[in-house]
Length: 148
Image (tube, rainbow, N blue to C red; front, side, top):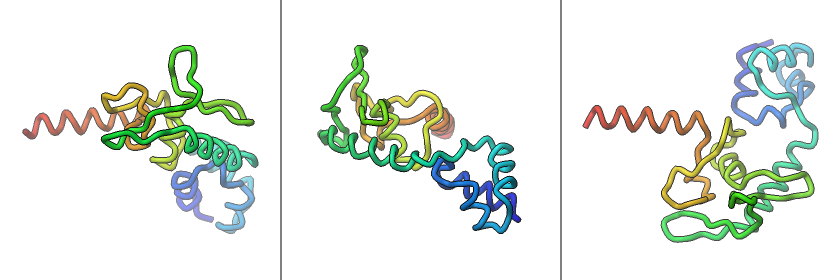
């Protein structure tokens, strides 16, 4: 059994799409061992319907965006009372920025997802960042300012 291997698999994929049993078979251990590693690493629990839900949200997102100049995307679907672009499916609703982030980064976002460009409510995958990514961008900008 490889704690590091299980932890790496959970970190590299979306842990909600990886069942404890499938990982146990892959790494030659018990599902309980995988559950323990999942708990120790803080990875979210497996969700049998998560993949179908993710695909439905991504398809709804793709149907409601419009490419605009400069690589940005304008939202053509439903917006909240505050003007936030919302993706609505039979599974519920989520902000378009969160969907765009997941498409770009291949992982669920941490904290709020915001546009990093100057285009209000831009939902282009390359223009959105979650809290850790925004912090990383700020550190890189500060380091660049110091080096210049």
